[in-house]
Length: 441
Image 1 (cartoon, one colour):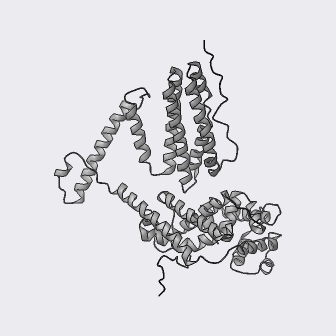
Image 2 (cartoon, rainbow, N blue to C red; image 1 turned 90 degrees about the vertical axis):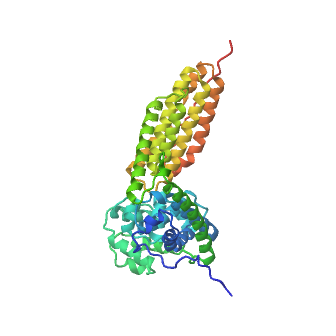
Image 3 (tube, one colour; image 1 turned 45 degrees about the horizontal axis):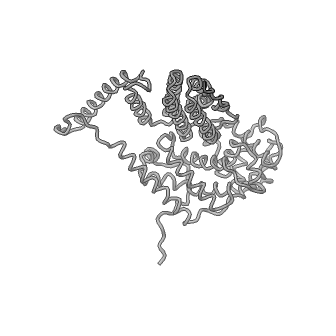
């Protein structure tokens, strides 16, 4: 007897779902909600991955990574089920754009595109996402998206030339027809723009030819099982964070028969937390690394970072704290305290690395995200030369070498993150040329 696994993805992929609570329930990591949300995109996700990689194993790995990354960013996601579908496909396309495998033919031409054009082609042609749903996903207007698509298709065809100028709404409709299987040459006959519509629609057909067979049940089961295992872990953590009972002194002797009592207890706990937090903040906000209140200061900072749910807000706080560590390092270096200087610099780089990871996990790249990214780049580019000079002047040669080593390691580690964040220019080194050691008297 053959047992059919219940973990096979649904065959129909719909980007419009009727359940308005699906995303909000999925953000609480409810198993059925996440399964329903991802199941309806699993077929499209896998076929896009297979078209981009050309290998079933690579496609499964790419699709699995996209699903796990979507789970990581789900708590901060804002949008409906259709937006989630587009976002999931874009996560896969973006990852493929950053790790392009050697290819031939149409895939090789696709590999020659910029990351944005690569994602646009992947979503519009391979993922069958219409322009209306691309507008919020790519933060662009419909005429711009159509023009960029024409430009990208010309590059795939080995030609150059922008798509700006003519009205491309008719061409956009022709793209949909070719995606559905219409003949490119016949479809192009009814178009007046662009002038090379026939060649462009042929490229659409060539790209569609990259799409392989539908996902098989074994692959769907593996992807879904891995995803649901990750959901179970996140659900347990979510329940722990959101259902940990708040208590105040003497609460165990009080019994409330209604919600009013619960709200009263939470209110008392909140007031106590605010009062205690305010006292600690006043006592420790100006504490230096050598102060006895410095531990309280760092504890308060860690608490502030931990309660930030929004990854962009958390990144901004980490950047601010990195700036504080930099000032502390400058003060300690000027005083000749090498050990405290090294500790502050090490903490600074850890905060900047954490801020980069948080920005990578943010699902929405709006103006606030771009401002935080710019601040991160600016703070990461700051040289430690003056601190090294002060350490050298005070005879702290070993500490100076430690600071240089930390700066060099940070330079190496941040390149990958900054590239994924979209930094195109080479950042100046945060390390400096080692200063000569002070000769012994």
